[in-house]
Length: 263
Image: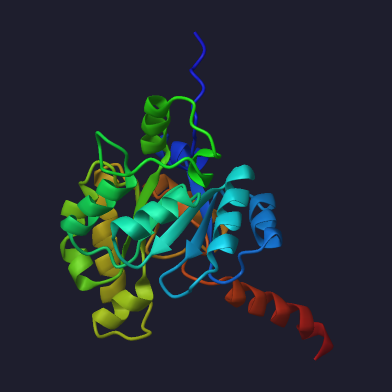
């Protein structure tokens, strides 16, 4: 018997559910076809789009999300807060995932699920736009497929988030956990000390909770070579890539390397 064709799929989420790794790249300002094409060409599965610190033109935002989807990527949008308007519009614009920055309370996580999932799981309203490739032939099947495909990621970056991590991660619809070491360090009184043992220990405590519950999580400390990547994979970590940096950081680094021979 062949598997029934799904109306919407999320390859990255399917990889996570099967225990595989995914690679994500973070984009702040550069919502261009060239950027999303290069992200897909170089082997990433997820493109993270920042909206906590950046305001985007709605048309450009939608175009970027749609192109990412058509290139087989999982466009996941980092949002600064949970509200029906923000979550619904972001998903209806074409996002396949939501990353909640400053995830701190179980109530926030429950609200995120509420507005991200269609009934009977949540209360998301049905639209026939970019989210569904502008057509829905079977609403019941589409809603079920979309609930399965929509990825929910928590970004832990405060002491309150650390304290409530176990209850938040226990929410059944949470798919993954990432960290914001910069803000977490500041909240702990360790401004800029990203390698401080207390900061690493705090992130490790959350990582252990996620691993014990079978939820995808990134390593508190980035792998810097293939051997360390393999070691982290053996430990159970699944989320990798430069998601704590920006495209202009990467451009600056490449530009510096390119000009070095001429200085």
